[in-house]
Length: 68
Image (cartoon, rainbow, N blue to C red; front, side, top):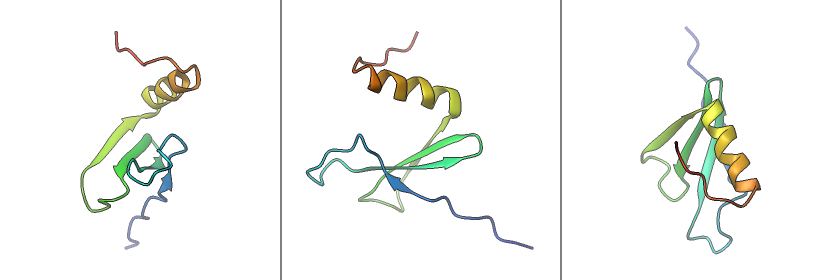
């Protein structure tokens, strides 16, 4: 039996540059995983692909994302 592969984490381009606001993301088949880079064994948030695209599009427009 093959062990499942580990996600490949990368630092979000939206993280602050001061080192105090570090968010890491990992793409998975159903969406994106998000975690605090300073607590890699801590909680992970899972977001579906459509919700992630909506969120990132809001960041690109520099407007807050508001849920309906």
